[in-house]
View: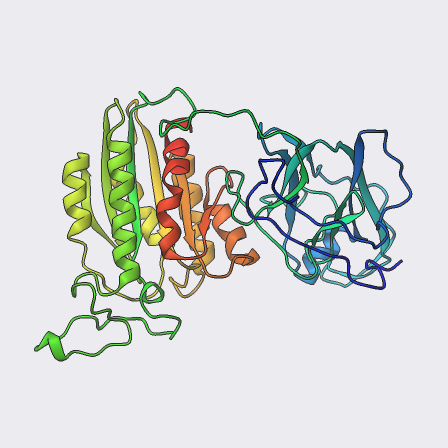
Length: 414
């Protein structure tokens, strides 16, 4: 059967929840029939449905389709209402395989996932990278169509999404509450009670060319003038910052790094910070020290340009963290791209370095800046580096500071 009605339904995505009755609903009603008319819901509820052709994991892997998972959360409480379940090997059609074991053909069938949800409520739909191949059964991120109350909430074929479990920037909201969520007094303190947790944190700062090159492809290794700086012209250089900083984007990374040290430095616990800078190779910028000393190190960072070597960055950071003691060790990896060094296997080496650090008890937190909000492959790679699969991602450097509270929570509550 066809995935789509003969005319396109009305789709309106909301990036913020509608908390007052006077606001418009997150999605508009459509005159088109529901894609899932076969199930009737009790009074006071409406049908949420996900439909798509189901393919086996072997088929998806052979076809190069990235795996993803989804969940629905209550906007007010944050409670997970529904989520994709792990795969079962039962129910797949017989397959013909190539000699190398990849699937050449699989008969498709139409899969429907349905659930009745209360109508007087607002929900957020999140689609995230799947860390494990079998984490989410049969969900094809390239074709899934999601509907609620006869309206298309998300058509993955036309515009897919990723959202980490704390972010609402790229998530899709649907449903409507008659009353706003119960009010809570905002707090800058962590949501857990571990502010006294002693820790060591290594901040790995990306200095690769992509930070400053404005998508020109330059490695930006020549940001400093040999003489007469006022007449120096470089495609990577912004005149609003000094030569050490090179460009506005790296200045923002420095500001964000200082913001995190200041925020975590206020914790009533013993803590130390180290700083590693990386591009083609990693360099130690500052050993474990106090927050005040670390702020000076960050301010004096000298942008280098180059390629991106996450493996070297993680290894260098891990070398600054003690292997014994009561403190929790963290690595905060701030980067704007996937690995490109070492040339023989950049991503494999990065994952191996991350696995080694995690096996020593270090908690890795990737912070990823990418203008491509739905860069599935890059986000999945970052998720594999992460200790818990979370990736704190933003689409531009200016949005980094908005991650502050969530990252403070991550350090204090992990």
